[in-house]
Image (tube, rainbow, N blue to C red):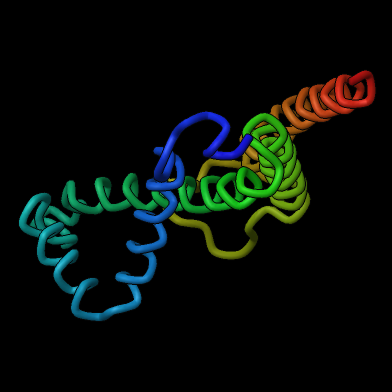
Length: 164
């Protein structure tokens, strides 16, 4: 559908979101912008220092959460946005989901096979080699199940397109 046939003008919300994300990525390349973000973050949460008792301050946890959420949004969101512009909303969601869960299944497999070796932190001292692999193994199995679901959905989508 073109914008002329629907009577709409301008950019959609998703297109504005993509432009905003692209602008943020470009701004993050400027050191002064990154420094301003760091100052704002430290003002809101506090410095990422270790407290007098040796425990990390809450700023470390908040920064970790922000980094995890932002990296997920950038990784999955950018791929979805690129696919959306080329494939359409429904097919882009299916392709992005299949790719993400395929990546997670491979990551879980590699981590299960080649779990970290060598010196362990104190918090992992009691875990044996099998216990270290339980969480990545569960992630791998869950990702394989979700990957299968996305592949079935892609197959159904393809069959619907062939019928039309």
